[in-house]
Image (tube, rainbow, N blue to C red; front, side):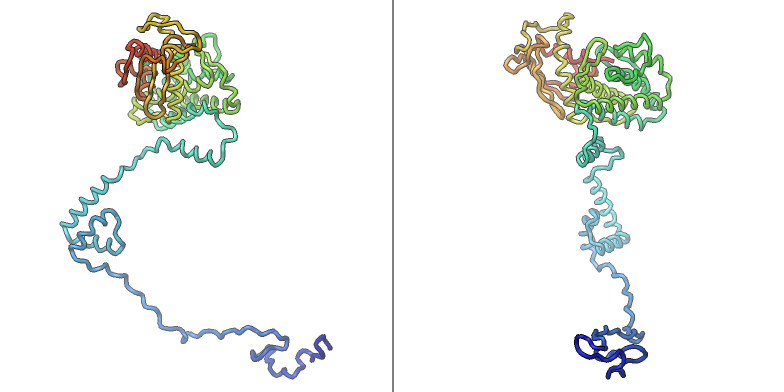
Length: 425
């Protein structure tokens, strides 16, 4: 047939037919179709391989003299020797008693340079893990900022309860408050928290933990005694579950309600707090009673995170003017009062709370409606934040505080006594 390049011989009929053998090209030149074939090497024979590579024995440790090996003991104790030096030193220690004694002393000294590992988890671990997770993916329904402290303190207390054995639950815990003291086991302490948390639950229209009945009081101590009477024989697991489930319901409810719920009021059978302040109050009591339990069972327990502690201190400082006025009406104040119009500056005490979570507050002395200010300050009190909280919890008296004071002694006494009087069961 004829193609574009001129006449072509039929396949296999050209002059180069002699180079096809057994149906294939013999490899010389170019096949008729014009595409060079790749060169395929012949199979390799065993004779082409070289001699086997000899297996080298492991290198012997370097030959080091006694003085060199002794100079390496410090690096060996710090695990800083090279592998061959480490082998040489350890072989030498098996033969030299003097160097072995020196190596033992150096290893003991190295242990003193490093803190012992703790079996207990870092108390900030949960917060850091959650913060890292929320930093990558914020919560779809965030907890209001004023409820975060309660959520954290409830989680810490729950972790403590998870570590308690059956005997720990029967351990006696001393509950202290201003002019009061009561001994209860761990289960009853948790029952007390459940009963008082129920006041917040009532404000959110959640289930009353004391159950229905005409004798359900709003006063915290009366509620506690009612709870103990009705549920005092429950097993520890049930006590913990009831308290934990109620706390989670509180946090979940305000998370869905958002910040707008913060203005609701919680009635404590006399004193009334805004819901956001009630959550700080519950966080404070959760920490204080967790610390009581930890002290009774010999468990280490840290103070709250600084920002949570600051919120608790701030709440106490804001409640102080009302407590001072109450003591003045009862004739318990020692400093003479004055008349100050609402919103006007008046006599003040400068409260300086030191340490993590601390801050500065000017406490009005003459009226809760007055404005505290630096210009009218008549006294100064400086103390640690945890000490101040222990005072507000009724765990310290004003006389027991390690505090720096100056100025009007009567004003100092009134403020510190008012702080202690805010405590309750």
